[in-house]
Length: 241
Image (cartoon, rainbow, N blue to C red; front, side):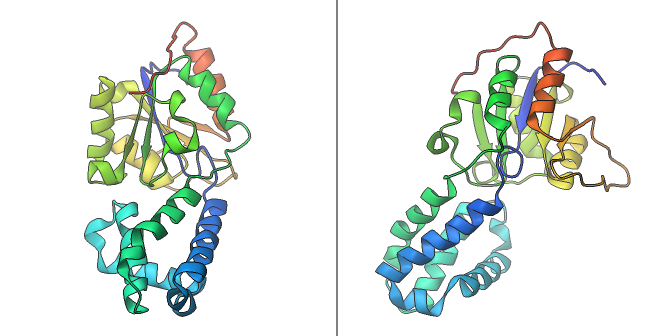
């Protein structure tokens, strides 16, 4: 299938890099820091208990479901309070978490594919997570990053897709959204009027009654091939906006 594309919006977690190793690293790093600096909290909230606390805090603060950074800070602060330790430690503890969160290992195809795609069309990062492309070292491939925490609504809400299109100065149908999540990425983009591309790295079966992706690839390299063949005359140099 070929259709005009003026810009891409791109999911990050489990599209550009796998999130599971990051999640494990975050838990270990925070636990190690708490054991050294806040031992009562570490004793009361070992990793499994901290996970359970996070679930509780998220359920109690559903109005912050779009803001993973705020929810993570609340979880750490709650653990400190319930352990009788100074909640002022939350800033240092969150920085440990955030540093570990941005130590990513991209899928083998991702960086080269980003370079190839960004040479053809502008790419905007569109994420429900709280990764920082500047810290990670990938910002040069993107014209901007829009996160759910910044925007105030998470994918699949149409308004976050529309906000990205507005910043790209493109009509909705001229933007291709790329991601791994069937509902948040593909269905969300389709309902918002964007084109959609499913990155299906693990061979899952498509499961949605009424919506199908415009494109499907098992890697970003496959998408880069499509971009180069479908948009042979498009050239774009990525800038940090």
